[in-house]
Image 1: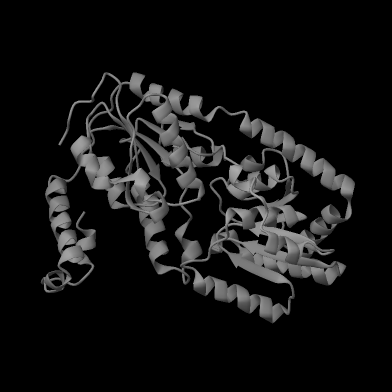
Image 2: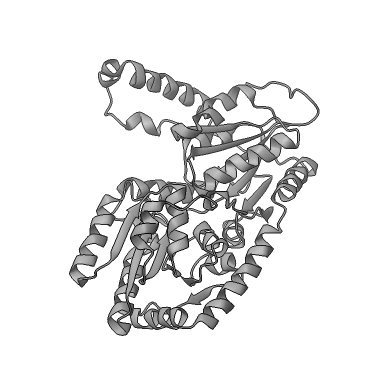
Length: 411
């Protein structure tokens, strides 16, 4: 199962359930890989699944078994429970866990049954890791505090320091020509999922239009794949309120995203659960005033900048929107504070923080070996054989004497 490292320096590999394209976690994983290579570490990314656009950067998580060594370090990006997570747990390699937070499952009840199960299982599975991890890092102070509440004693913060080059594109000409007019553009960027509370953003916009009669529109940007029922409820709300000028774009290109930020007059968020929330600091970068609900990691991400609100009465939020959009001096003060917060964020040396965390693990006393089920590897091998049948001999798989889906719990 193990092999000796090729030098005195351990390999530092990353493992996670899924590597996406263009999302915050995916960008961080790729950035860590680059930093480790530049520092001279052997480093690969091991996943269960990946976006086709980043397949060339990944290896199958099962390959970890063959290259495992007690001196190697696994950087385990924990966001949901997975087979990759359980294999990483069972290997003898040292571990740095990076916690990206798991949305409480109750947000997805009645909207996405599978995510309810995945989020519940992930939060439950995380409780097994305090004794397994040499170091547990939150990507925000909020996430670090949640780790400590779960019993992790060796903690730290590996902050998100976004790369904003994707917002330096030439803005999409079609969007600019359509929306660059005398209307005020209120913008939200983020996945169209329930914890983001897009319905509250719509209600706030409606209250603003009704109370102040301003000539405005609402731009909602973000993927809704897998959440079509939630999207339908948003359309129903828009129709029932009789609101005009609400534009839901879904997933957009970098040029389209750049255009949306450039066209906007205010960034409005009502999200109730964020581990960090990259769009907030993207708005900083584009010098767009931010108004956000004070929940979870939002206040620490804003770092004293932007405008926070705690009362979700639509009339209250509408009055804040109106105050910001009606006063150029207030807008200037908000943007100045955001600029300073962005300078502080970009001054963080991500690579140095990462390498210091790895060195901290290398110099620390080795943890006692954690126990796993005596038949873990036997059951894992059986699952692999079943998976091979499912993929390459589906008729034989379907003829097996168990209900389809039961084998998915075997590892």
